[in-house]
Length: 76
Image (cartoon, rainbow, N blue to C red):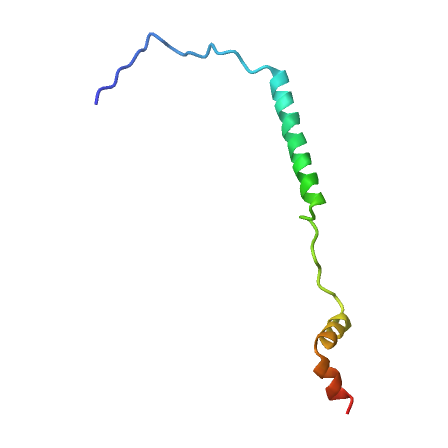
């Protein structure tokens, strides 16, 4: 392998900087896209969460409704 160096070329930082308006437009477009995606997910119900019933009685009533044999045992 052979390496060739060109020290006469020096630093080549003559590229034009990015105009500030391009940076601002890119930031605004990114924020708009983020807001749009969030609204779509919200409308589709992505952020809704089913929370368990915090009361024990609610759980017992649900269990009693699901199990009809439970009432037959306690009617005797």
